[in-house]
Length: 82
Image (cartoon, rainbow, N blue to C red):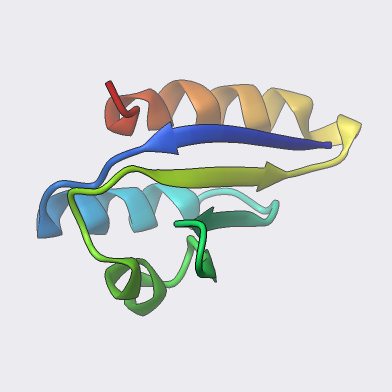
């Protein structure tokens, strides 16, 4: 099951906090900007997309991980594009 959200990482600290958050979870999490798709658990990958522009967050999980995914989605709302 794939879920998507739009997020924005404005600062270097946002990127660090976001990558730390993604690494707490055991399901694939990716970011894409339309042109590139990267592993959201890679700080270098996230920096390569740049900051301050909305990107698409993709969560790829199976039904057995639904509780973890809900927890992650709640935590990542701090970065939601407004």
